[in-house]
Structures are given as C-alpha cells and as structure tokens.
Length: 264
Image (cartoon, rainbow, N blue to C red):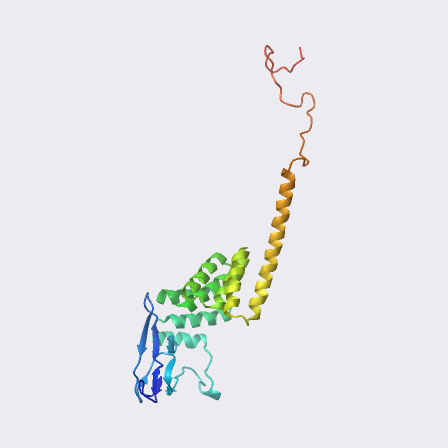
C-alpha cells in the first residue's frame, strides 16, 4: 500500500498510480490521480502496477508491503517465493495470471517443465496479453525441444512488446537451432541494439555469423561444382558398349518373333 504524504496538483504534477487489469481481452489500466495527503492506495502486490513520471515538484509517498510466509522480516529482506507459498496465495486470491507465471518460474527451476508449461498456459487463459506468460511459455517449449511452437510464442511476445531484448535473443537462438540463420542474425542484432552491453548477445551473434559464413561457403562451392558439371567440354558420363546379344532384341521386318538377326 502507499500513503500519500503530499497533495497532487499542489506539491507536484504527474506521478499518477496505475494498476493493470489482467482479466480482459484488451489491456485496461486503472489510473489513480489527485491523491491528497493522507490518502491510502492498496493493491495486490502481484498485480502489475507502476507510477507515471513526475512532471513538476516532489512526490512523497510512504510505501508498505505485507508479506506472506515465515521469517518475512528477517534482515529486512523480502522472502523468496516458494511453490507452496504461491499455491497458498492462489487459493486465497483466486485465479491470477501473474501468480501462475511466478509459479511456472519456480517449476522450471525444479526441472518440472511439463507443470511449468501448464502454469504458463493457465496464465494465458486468464490474461492473453501477459507478455511474461508468452515469453515464459516460449522458453519452456524451447527447452522441451518444441522449437516451431517456441518460435511462435517468442514472436507473439515481440508483437506485444517489441522492445524486449531477451525475447529477441531467445527468438534468435530458436531460429538458429531451426536452421534459419538469416532470421537468427536479424533477431540477435535487434537484441544487441536494445541492449548493447550484454556479452551473451555478442557471443550468440558471433556464433550465428560464423555458421552463416560456413553455410554460404558450402553453397558457393556446391554452385561452382554444379556449374562445372553442366558447362560445355566438361567430362560427360558415357554409356558402356553393349556386348552382342546383351541388349534388347530388335525384330526386323519378315523375321519370326523371338529370333535375333542372323540366326536360322
């Protein structure tokens, strides 16, 4: 929850609080503006939320979190999400797409890819526009070897958020594994453009370019070989001469059927 310590419009402008409604086919964002000093805004921590930029002045807010789980205040650290805790929150809070994504990540860490895939698909049933669910599903499908389906999930992710470098990176790796080296290069360059400091992007792009160079060399060599075989003066395959009586018999006019020439 957030407690306003100043008044919008007087002490600052902008800074509106927004919560995304994840239970609709189209994205709906609820905006809370005009909060006065002492007003309290509360939301479920797993719901996607944000604060818009402050255009003037200084926005002062006291933020508090309520945590579920043992030892949640130890060393002033937020407790890690655990499978049993997330399942309990799902029971309390009901169906929630974001919680299903969190659960799928925990299941991936445990190596339970089939259950993780089910959680991502459940999240998408609840919220078809949830970027994290599409991207998570693509990553799981890629690990399970379902590369064409993973490619579709990564492409859908980028339709919803084209500025997500990790999605471009994972799409590039997927395309390289599928043999689409040109497409992989394009995706990896897009990822590197969005995140130039990531070393793994440079490594993956270098591997892809090396594979693409080798492929082009093989294609060029094959083209030269085919051109040499079809050019005038190139050695041609010759048929072996047939021995007498080894070829098909040809019946001449006036000759009884079944007898080769020259035989009585």
